[in-house]
Image 1 (tube, helix red, strand yellow):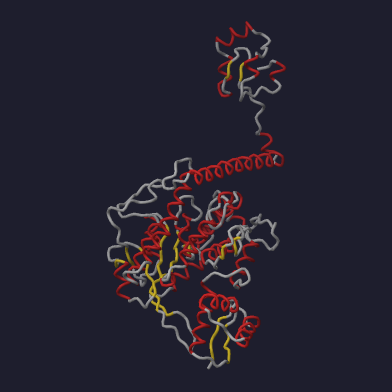
Image 2 (image 1 turned 45 degrees about the horizontal axis):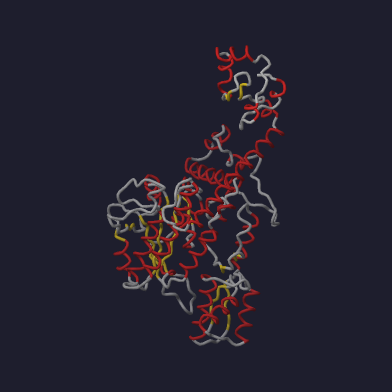
Length: 518
């Protein structure tokens, strides 16, 4: 009997995990064979001539699932994780975010969400050829590639777009949008995963929520893919990427060739790939969440396909007008489904945005509702819908509170004063660091740019020593021409500074204090 094994992962790590979870032990011959297969055929599909019983096959299949979908100890790192680390070192992305979070000791599974973002980094060309930790990344300085990183539409860019075929212009615009957003994030030291500043990074908390979601019994029965409008990428008010992080949902962006091809070729029903000895019976139904006129209710659709099948949800992350455009580009053979939303539902995001439609909710909330309704239809009476809802709701509340505190508003949900104080302290420190960095950039530009040096203003006086009053620099000319100033100048012709003027904070006296000049 021949067994098809996909060896892109560390099977031995999977074996150790299965032994720990299920108390299953393997002979040294089995372990040796699997180790040899992994070392000599990594990344290939191989066929191992080995006689095994159905029981042994079941264990090996569990190893495959474990190696691909669950967490690993530090000694059992998957091939995909190694690839992710190498790609992360080559890009501007968080080189501190590796496969294991050393600060918490958490075991982190391979996250397709992160893989999709690393793919986008490579797509726009913001990766370095140097693997070292301190490697810096710069966009192209000349040629066509440099045009994609211009913040403004230069004449060269408009000429380049005009030279493209009509069907390629949207693709070019999307690539420029992604390029400029990623470059701005790189310069502002923004985390690629959570889209917060690295000093306010939210990733540790999101990893904790992700680990809890992986423990749900039916988490593998529902797959999620986020279809993102390019205008929402790296946007401060976006919430869909947080849901994608927690669920390990890959992101597909309309206008990226690879993502467009994926959506166009996606079948409505597919069978999970197996091998010819043990064909898989897992049937996956793909649906797109969009409440159009003829859309099915998601809950009813899942009940009709049966509990033995799996669901692949396409969730659009966009405004309502943007979602209309995305919906037109998702193939019509993919069924459209809608959520059952209670009219009394109060949005958790009302502190951040206005609700434009009665049935409108954020992408994060829509994802949570979709998961709950899928789990409830697949396993009526089970605890998974409640558990998933609690986890995702807790993450939403924490995300909203952080956003509110960063905007100098009060927290809506958190009650612990020490938690609020910690976020505020980190926020203030981050604002100070950003201000210092801006001053450094201005100083560097002034030192190297002749035109910028010519634009420098002379020192500004904002205190009148004759009148002994503070005067805004914009009103100083008007002030010295006034009658009151003329009278004060007659009484104090030398403009001798008084004790009051010496103690005023904020006045830019400089050399004027000594010379008495205006």
